Length: 470
Image 1 (cartoon, rainbow, N blue to C red):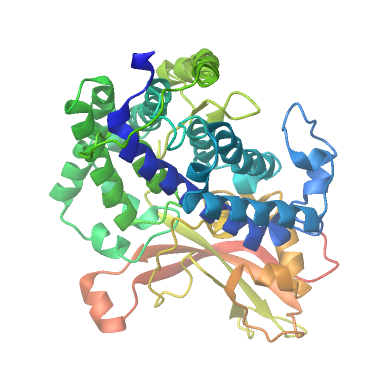
Image 2: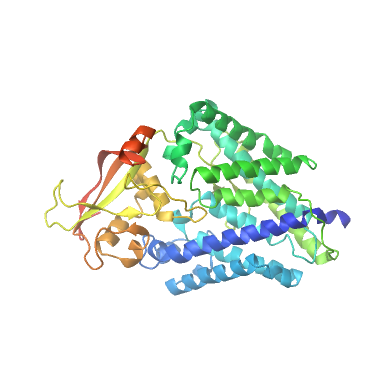
């Protein structure tokens, strides 16, 4: 079938697959480095405890068959190895069927991790990586030209990501409709980046232009993805420019990067296609069957997207093949941060020798400038932002975190930038206090060198020692 393939998109496929392999590699490296203190047998939310109450049908995962920290590490390292091989182009050296199978390996491994990851993996970009990763397996390799059906389905994912995010904004916070959300967002976003302070201090009229441009990019431009070329390419290029702007303004894990990768599916790049063979019949049947299944599974995400009660970042099937997305349906006006401190004093007082634990990406010391971490995902730092919004977000794991700090647990301390206590000499008491943070003004920055100004609000957790009831 001549219509089945689109040879002009061979370079777009190449860049998309290599970019996706790089994001898989980042995701698996994050799992390698963080799983033991977060999800391990002695972690904050242990996988074995989750598996005891969740069935395979609810959360398909290799770990239902067997779990140990060593086996989890082996799966994560295997994901790193396969992702690195795909990044180097190993799929192009294999027969078509073997290339498809190789692409399904990181998808199956990462699905197994996400489905036992609980709150640490409850982010939209986790399911987005899985949905795009599954589709990428059927894009083929150098033997055949990219299938039109898969390219269409990738654009369909991109449409849902952008259009869903645009709708949730219009239906959510009134500041999106008033074009004022960016008066606050750069300061109150989960993890500011090194340029967020400067973005925050842009003139307010420019912030209003940013919001208006965002609405146009998310509510109008996605429709143009399904128009003829070169309009579709222009729409994809505009989305890529918008995502690069967002990448500069904050740390949103790989959400923006995978959106850039997705946009490549609609970008027809000027390059002569290499000679390829005709697509075999079994491949055409397989791709069409996958397309039919995914279109059928799209009904619930579509109904959610058009509903007045639209929800963000929800999976409707346990394999996470077709999902609904959205981001920042509401924007915080004030930034709160939970600051964790410890003391070696036997009888700690309010003015005792309290020392602050430092996190990698979460604001702490007002003089420490934010750093760039995305596309790497600091899971504990992100959950600490949610904990500051409401203690309910921390109910499952915060008490365990405090216990681990009191126990001087090495794995847990590796999640932090710095512990104020030397190894082997943990604090006797740990407390947590809630502070209000705001970006300093230009004058305050020049006078103090601090990018943040913080004000004590209240206790989040009173001084606690081992053996104290949670």
